[in-house]
Length: 84
Image (cartoon, rainbow, N blue to C red; front, side, top):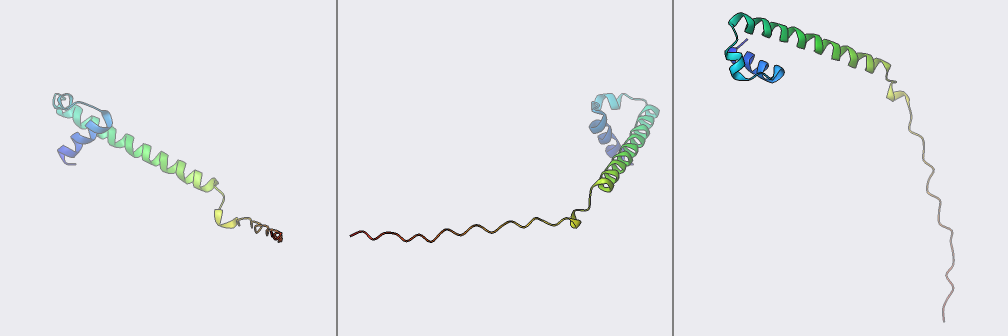
């Protein structure tokens, strides 16, 4: 992975300051980056599993039909009285 992308990932996900990353020994930087990648993979797999389970439990909406609404009642025909 590109060094700048790796640093950005640490800034973003771990909310580390640039000075903290620059002061890390190289091996600690590598281990932290590997642990972050593993954590994000596991998190994504768990979220995918949850969304798959949720979709599996949801009823198929194409089976349902919308209820027919009764047509609006017609207004009664009232003759207006003539004035005059």
